[in-house]
Image (cartoon, rainbow, N blue to C red; front, side):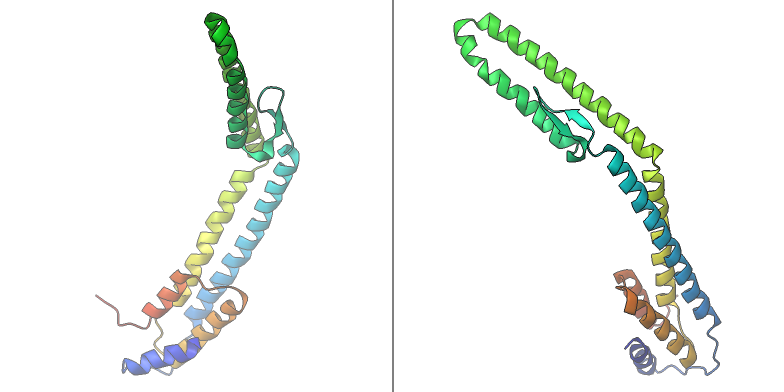
Length: 205
């Protein structure tokens, strides 16, 4: 299909194509993509392994989440902080009847609850700071950053291949075969398709 599109675009533009089988650059671009893809796949596996090891070590770390309540760390900081605030607010509301009888005693008890709530929120901060330090020790962020850089390089290599401007039927066939082989294994991103289509258009000075 891609080979047919390339041929149709060239014919429609009325271009005279050379016949020299100069496909070395296309082969180089295709090989660069294969190498970038292999690296991205390897780094993805390493990133996943680091994340899984980190999750296994920390996901069930108990975190205080309210009065007499603990929650596992995997539930996330936002959810645990929400639980803590709700727990202390419920306790404060239960004291309101005391305020009807003795306003000063109610305000004193409410202030104590507020201090305990703030202390517990500080302990939650410290617990998640330790978890984040553990995440760094497992190399989760570094490995994820490495994978994302490799993934960007893989996409750039594919865009370069798709954007190559062919000057011969041999080049067009080689480019189409390379892209078709890639398309059999994965979805071509929009950027690569756009580069391919733009390669059929006359160059703009």
